[in-house]
Image 1 (tube, rainbow, N blue to C red):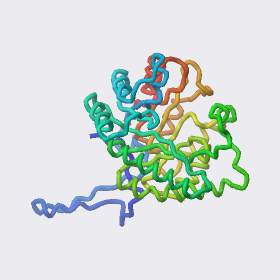
Image 2 (cartoon, rainbow, N blue to C red):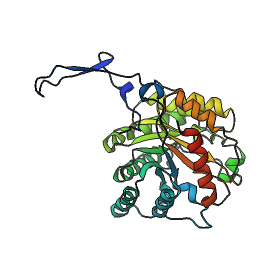
Image 3 (cartoon, helix red, strand yellow):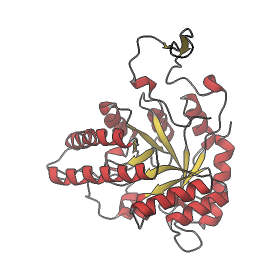
Image 4 (cartoon, rainbow, N blue to C red):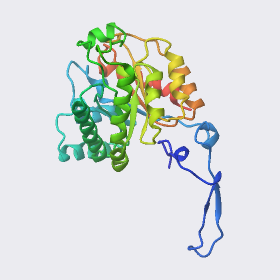
Length: 328
């Protein structure tokens, strides 16, 4: 069976580069020594070239035939289009009861689909400790939801400063937001790191890897994301790499994130057929696929279709281009 999630070998202390498996309890057999592969060795050197599985975010169907389908309907549509899995956007869920969560999991299983990602929102850029704690509690609740649906990884954010009220204006400003008077980015990084460290034990308890995305706020740049994840350095906080959220030096910043010793837990791949809602980027997926293979990324590619074209047209076209570049 193929293994699609990155292992945590680099976070485990071992006495040597191999593990001895003692089978003395099984017919008195001699120990077997199994070499451990380097954690950053390219995937092609492990088991040969592999295809990345392609999922789709429910966010991609927000312009589906002039109406927004439910999350359950998104799973059906994704299966019909030929995707391997679905990433659920938390904001699109209208029922968080356990029955509803199990219904989503059951529908995906029936269709041979994987619920492979959970995209959430939270924010820790508040000077008030109680507001940061509210978002810590929110994130823990979101981890519970992911666990209930059997989802292995969850996208998280640093949050925004809130000095730009309109998201449309934020996009016009290329994601740049002023720091409130009396506060500093250094203070913000401290708040984010401290908050996420409080959440880590619950991420481990629920078996859900958090992935910090390059997604505005202190995560607007690769340097910002890496400052946080490398400071914490936990297998339960990794990187969600979004191909469309850098406005300048896009590929060098993507390379910077991919080159970190902190693994990528999920890649969100943007496409813009029909022109983007806020902006349109010409993303070279052949180059990105080559970069990801070079660092040994074997995980999921999750489509985030952000074009103005009807999702029933733009999403299948996007799947085709991703299959082309992320197939071995």
